[in-house]
Image 1 (tube, rainbow, N blue to C red):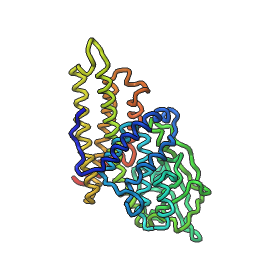
Image 2: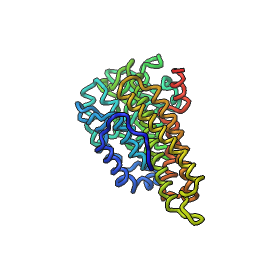
Image 3: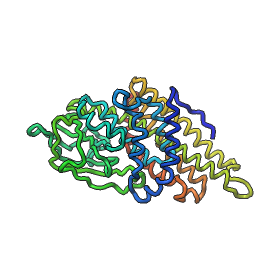
Image 4: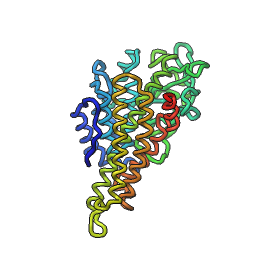
Length: 375
C-alpha cells in the first residue's frame, strides 16, 4: 500500500525500525492471549527498557528524541496492538512528567527505574466525579506534621494493576486549582487498589481505581507544588492527546494492511476480492482518511517540537484520528466478511481497544471546547 503522508521533520530511523521489529516479533505473538485473559503482559517492562529513553532528555539519561520520532514509534507499535502501546505510553507520560520536576532528589530516586522498566508509572488525575472537569477533583492532600496525608479516590488509572509509582494530583485548598502533584509508592500504607475494570477492550492497559486512606507522603515527595501542578497536568494532557492520535493512526494502518492482504488472497466468483471495484473504493476512502489523519498528527508533532502552543492542534488530531481509526477498522472488518470477526485476525481486538480512545485524555466534546476557543 503506497502512502504519501510523511514526517515533517527528520526522525531517528533506527528506532523506527526497532519499533516495527519489536511489534512484529515480540508483541504480535502474545497480545491476543493477553487480551483474552484480561491481563497486562510482562512484555511491557521490556518495551519500557527499549523505548522510554526516547522521551527523556539526554541530560537525564535518555535520548531526547524529537516528538516526530516518537510519533512514528507509536504508530509502529500500535499498528500491532493499541492496548499494550497505550499502557506503554501512559508510563512514558508519567516518566516525562517526573523528568520535568525541579525536585532533583525525587527525580533521581525514581526516574532511572522508569527508564529500565524496573518501575512502572501511572498518572492519577481523574476521579469518579472529576473526569472532563479536571478542576473539580476532590481527593485531598493535607499537610500534617511535615507530611502530606492523602484521602480520596482516583478512577480510570491506566497501569493500575502493575504500576509501582503513582503520580497523584490532589487538592490542598479551597480554590479549584489548589492542586499538588505527589509521588506515591503503591506499597505505601493506606493505598488500596480497587481492581481493574472489565472494559470493552484494551485490557492490556489494566485500567482501574485506587482509594487513599490516610496515606502519609513526605513533604519532599512533591513533584509539582500547589499553584503549578494543575497547569502542568493540563500541559501533559496536550501531549497525551497527540500520542493517542499517533496510536490510533497506527491501529488504523495495521487494520488496512490486514484487510488488503486478506482480500488479495480470498477468491470469490473466480477472482480475488480486491479485484472488485466496490471493495476497492471502500478501502480507498479509508486510505484517504488515514493520509489526512497522519498529516494532521505530524503537524501536531512539529508544533510540539516548535514550542509554539499545541493545545488546539492536539485537540484537532486526537478527535479526528480516533474517529477515522474506529470507522476504518470497522470498514476493514467488513471488507473481510465474517472472517474479519475471527480472533485469529487483530481487527476485533484493535476496534474494541479504540473504543477506549474516544474518552481518554478528553472526549471529542472536550476537544471541541478547546478548538472552539480559536473561533
